[in-house]
Each structure stands twice: as structure tokens, then as C-alpha cells.
Image 1 (cartoon, rainbow, N blue to C red):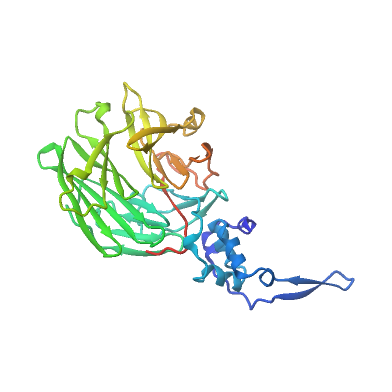
Image 2: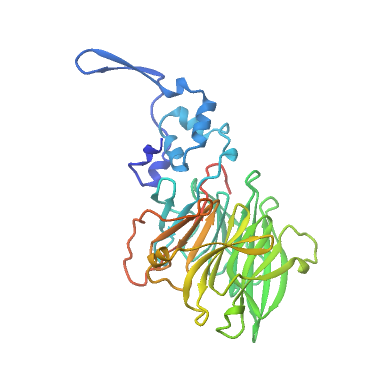
Length: 406
């Protein structure tokens, strides 16, 4: 079935619906000049629909979409309510790479078929917007006013705009996180805002705002002042707990106090929740940190800083938070680290299920780490070349699904 995908990299061609003539269960074809007639039997007349359902459930998402254009029967099975997509095994995440500094154009990488597809994302206008994804949905927030928020399924191009969040307007720093329940498809969006207290660089207003898709409303959970720390742009939700990285406002070069992890239980509904807001040191001196939800386990990918030069990256590590303690999972092998070429102190990294993607902002090379197999490999080459020295690239990953809507 996956051979259906070999001839075309256009996502639009995969999404085309079936428009052929009525199916014929059996037809006779004459071969050659000897008059021999061969009887061809449709696969649909041999296999019952429930068996076809099962077969389709094991296919990669791109093959499923292409299969829907084969015949009316397959199209009906794939798009009907009988096909229980909620029970389908989680798909390997795709990675969408923005291929320009400003526009939101780019390609999505399928690690199963090792192919790149040219996909137009709905809603998003610029590549520097905030992005978060969970269980098939992707959430976008603009980087200007930080009040325009959209939720979409990039595979079926379903989307909606969310009410503007409360809190301070035009914050200095913001982060975005979304968590989608796999069975009910309800979701929670969290926006964190941080703004400097006037005339005091060491103190920052810090607030957390939650959106509930069932109630279609926002509520503000935390509104406080952080002395000596400010919010950043990195946050994620795992098992009902919000994790975000906060940054020191102390003397530059103090690497030991550069980052901390803040944890907050977003399921708490009591009015006094400051006791639920705790912080924890990161495992080592980092140039940057990226927070990832892998099967409801918090994983951090970080640039390991040189001891005497905290702005210089000497390696990339992966840690998991287990029972409140950091456990080192892996480090990028030196040969792969060198493969990035000139790597700045910050980089893009995201993941879901068992896969982690790491990408330099300065090139299209995409490194994939399989947590279950402990294997590193480069993706297939992205069909984009760098056109000018200052061209930047970034990206995010998402789980491709057909059944979930915003």
C-alpha cells in the first residue's frame, strides 16, 4: 500500500477525494492475441469492511489518505464514522520545517516513508509565531500583539480562532502550550505572560492563563511578581502539569542560575494556588532548553554550555524528569553534533511519542532520535537549499490525524 506514495510529493494530490465511476466487483480482461480471458476480482468483494478497517489502521497516514482516492468503497470506509480513528495507534510525528525567515511556507517530513510534503498551514502568517501541538491539533499565537490564537488540524485543514486571552497586553515574553485529550478531543490552552516591573529589571510580572475548549472561556490562574526571574518562551503540559523554563535576571555570565524549571498543576481550581507553583534547577549549565511531552513524560533537550564560556555550546543532551529528578537519557554523538556545522547556542527541538527532532536555525539538516530504540539518524534531505547567508530555518512537530477537529 505504501507504494502508492512513491510517485508524488504534493500534499494536494494525496488529499484528492475519489471521483471515479461506480465500482465493479469483477471484470474480464483479454490478454494478448490468444483470446485468453483473465478474471479480475475486486479486493472489496474478498475482504469484509471490518478487515479493511483493520488493514487501514496500520498504514501510515499519508498512505491512508492516498488510499481514499482508489475507489468509492475505500473512500467510504476511511471517511465514514465506522472507521474508529480514536482507537488507531498513535502515528509517528511529522516535522514541519519553516523554510524562510518571515513567511510561514515550508515542508512537512514523514519519518515513516522518509518523504517531505509541501503543505500550506492554515491560520499562521509568519514563521516566528508561537507554536504548540498535542494529539493531532496545533495551536498558533501571533508574535506581535500575542492575542491572536488559532487551533487547527493541519492534515484536514480544519481551524478556528480562540478568544483573546486576558492579562497584560503586549507582554515582553510569552509562551504557549496546548494539551488535547485523546479520547474526548477536549483541549486546554495555556498562555504564560511575563512583563518587566517598571524601573526594576530584577522583578517581572508573571501570569498564567488557561483556556478550556468545553467551556470556551479563559481563566487566570496565577498573577504574581517573580523577583530575580522572568518568564521565557518555552512551556509544555504533561499529565496535567504545566512546565515552563524561567530565566535569571542576575549578572550576565552566572551560568549556575541561568535557567530553572517551573511546575504548576493546572488541574488545581482553588483560589490560592501559590503553593502549587514550584521551581527546580535544570540538570546542568545550559545555553538553551526545549521542553517536550513524550507519552506524558517531561523530556528536556538542552544545549550544554562550556563552563568558562556559558554562551558557547559544547554539546546537546537529553534528560527526562522521573519522580522529580532529572535522568540523563542521551547525548548527541560527536559525529552528529559536528554534522550541524556551525551551531549557535540556541536551536529548535520538538517531539512526541518516541521521536525527538533537533534542527539548527542556520540550515535544513534535521536530526531524529528514537527514544525507544536509542537510535540517531538524519532525515531525508529537505528539498530546500539556503538562498542567502542570513536565511534561517525553524520548525515544530505534530501527530498527523484525520478524525480530530478544532
